[in-house]
Length: 383
Image 1: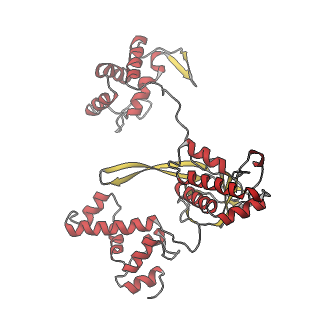
Image 2: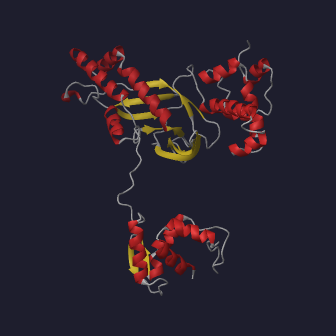
Image 3: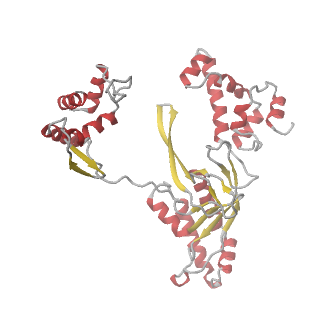
């Protein structure tokens, strides 16, 4: 009866959204057992599309991509089912016109871990609050989803690295070397390339650097194709990043395309807090290490304090509800709005102690009001 009702009402209403609204208004919910008794959950768009597209209800069966006549009695007459399918097709409920484009970023097929395991592209979609309201944002990663055994019998750790960060580091490393005339001279000398072609190689390197610097979208197919002409392999070591260049990528003549250029190796610092957290990376141990999570925590604390002072939020409880936070989170984080100015400046510049992470800051139950006590607690040098 329920299936017949859904088909009949869809034929009358002509819209899955209108059908969903009507079923909800009539409190007609999905069955939750073999006897068809209703549950407390209403029909979703996907569930209704699945019912309206299911050939079982007109007496057929589907196996993989093909449909065959069934031996059971149809619930919906063939003419009625066909009419529903035609209407769904006109509404965009038909088969996808083209295959879904496979996601590909600039280092796909190039990046491996220290044991040579390839990292695959993945992404997560999260809701982000903006001035215009919440939006869905896609976060890209290169990752190895499972740990595996290495040659010496030990277990290799799982890697999950923010794609944008490692791509930026690779591009910056390439640019710094391609624009370094002394490095290019050394590289072509080691490769056995004729010294009289140095000027041509420098010109070629400048051209490659210019094109590399102009790259836009890391997901664009042309971006990955161009990067593949420069890089043969990107390897993440325990404390280094090694770029293996394509043979002859700086050669001025076709006859010299087989010349191997020396690899580029730079220091790389990676740290991870929590098994399911992405790894935070930086190219050199002594350079600035801006932690977006730390910065966001301070920004949130100051925003909450402003809302409370201005009366936009009448209380911490109201702010907790409007922000969708767990009880106690905002009260515990508000003291971050009163950090010593030098501590705040250091965090914004990325000069905080490496032991000071967002995870550690969340675990501190009480942050003292005294600035010197804050410096002592958070590991800053005495002033």
